[in-house]
Length: 85
Image (cartoon, rainbow, N blue to C red; front, side):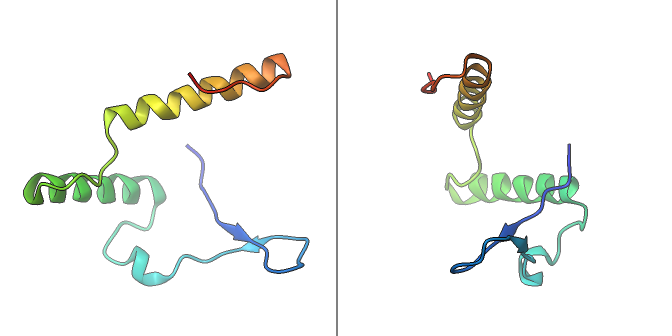
């Protein structure tokens, strides 16, 4: 696990700069990214179960992500473009 950050550049700017996440998006959640992400995911899963929605990632979503990662690794090793399976 690594700390993640957001950066942006606007208009003709060549260099990116740190982009702050607005406090309302973080309030009520742990400051540390990993426990905060887990807490938000559990909240989404609980809301999905109680409201019958589907907003939390599924096992199929995880499989799709792993296929993209595998394609990236294969492309990096071979030097050619690879479409995710």
